[in-house]
Amino acid sequence: MNLTDFTFIVTEKCNFECAYCYQKKGEKDIDISNIKKAVDFFSPFFAEKCHISFYGGEPLLAFELIRETVNYINEKKSEKEIKYSLTTNGSLLDEKIIRFFNRHKFSIRLSFDGLAQEIFRQKSSFNQILSNLKRILKHPGIDFDTNSVFTPETIRYLTKSTRYLVELGVPNVKFSLSTLTLWDQQSLDLLRDELESMRNFLVTFYKKNGSIPVINFRKSYPRGIFACYAGKTRMALAPDGNLWGCFLFWDYYKTREETGGYRKYCFGRLDSFIKNLIKNRNSVYPLISSNYAKLRIDHFCTPDTFCMLCDEMEDCMVCPVDAAFSGAIMGNVPAHHCEINKIESRERRLFREELENKGKSYSNTAS
Ligand code: SF4
Ligand code: SF4
Image (cartoon, rainbow, N blue to C red; front, side):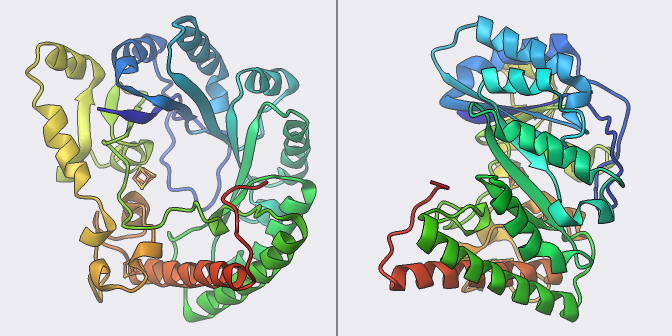
């Protein structure tokens, strides 16, 4: 095991009810004794640079658990470089919490839909999140980005909202396209138009500032044969004490306990996982991680073709759980999801070509 990312799913609770959210909320928080046990056991398997991530529900509903975990890990004074990260809806941030994140150099991903915030997210949340976003920007120790989710109903806001966030000074802006609902031809056409105007905006921005503030368009955005990291370099511990290859597998399977998929991807209880591994008779880890190893895009297919026959494959990234949430079985990609990926890949390629043709060597990062 060489773990670059270990996630603690600190709570099932959430204080928002976003219409496109696929999570089934619950009431459980993770047990601090399980966190400590996991840290003690998995630390030797952490890579030289390892991300410890906090996820929910809304993880700030369990801020004290986050604080205790960070303090516990820091007291161990590992030689390894530990980087903390967290995804939040931003509603519970206050000065004390932001200062804590700044002190411990957190990467914070704010789920904020910008100008489309109040359409599917919590009503009346725009001003509150905006003011918290501005507070975070004043703390240089925080590595900050936003993620905005767009649906067929909100796609018309994509470029306008992204520009708005960039102009506010957000250094790293990401957008995600929800595939939970079907995208009809009209919304796919709209997506094409929006991405084209985003590309034009980014070319102009790059010429002026020499940076690319939208993560989706950076060169470092995954290229090549995409393979899901779950169960290989990533593990996650759930509030019920079960271990998964990624927090998203927990999201998907926690309401599907009776399925074969649950048995295929769940590493089981932390306690028995540790006990068996220590006694050197753990057959669970190699067996389950070999199931995760098959989750590569060249093994996936759509209703019409095999991904390995597709010209876009090296530019395409499909999270298998995301695809499963949009109605396919694990490893299959629904047709509308594939079409969205093709549109995105094409725009990324055109963007790259446009900059390269202009003789610009374009950088990976924001600055
Ligand atoms: S664009 Fe579609 S067919 Fe091509 S690799 Fe991606 S999901 Fe597979
Ligand atoms: S591709 Fe999806 S399931 Fe795999 S590691 Fe990434 S987020 Fe997790």
